[in-house]
Length: 258
Image 1 (spheres, one colour):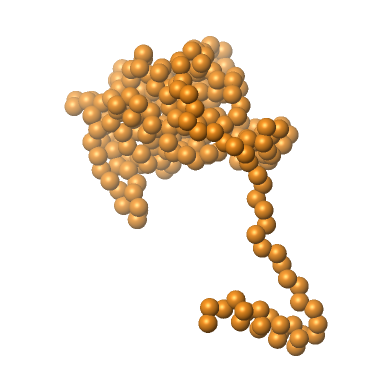
Image 2 (tube, one colour):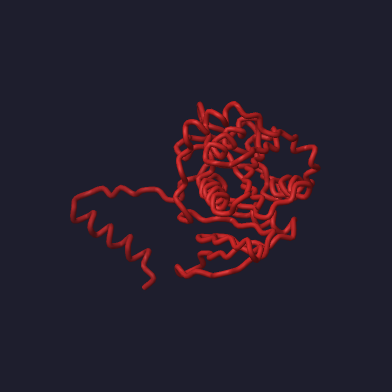
């Protein structure tokens, strides 16, 4: 069984950002720390668990991004993935989910997989669209918010349970090839072993220019960003306590619906 895990490198949640010179995106206000998108860690762990349960399986990790994004491949290999693929894109600005999905789809068409795993969303933008868009572009069966998987090699299917509103679950059985966008809580991601991390740092990942995969023309663009503005101002009441109390009553009456 051949499994692909799609990864994204994101800024640490504690990193302070500010609007960049273009006014259309953000950049770290000082040194920025990047790491593997938290939801994608669950996808890597699930892929490795499937590999351990199904003899002969292979896990490959893929990311789209600039040179620094290759660090997430090292972590995935440290967790047990067999190989890393870096679709290198130098754009540090906004990249739409459609463009990201199209680049990955172009690669996967030439290198088919039985199962594609993604995180349910990214921590930074929270679109939750790359997985479903990728599945549609590749005509794959798919499910989102997956919190349980059971691969059934004898029937080339995967049984999944996905989280829906109200805390309920929806059970599905998907035929391979399929795509699963996994939710947090599906498993407990392992910490990469030191020996695997050292091997990953010495390994050369396959690097392909994203531009060579002919991504589609952009269908959307960010026209500008702005900082949140205060919508309310405080009011300080002057006078004696009695005067303040009467004034407060007048204000509350004025705002009342009755």
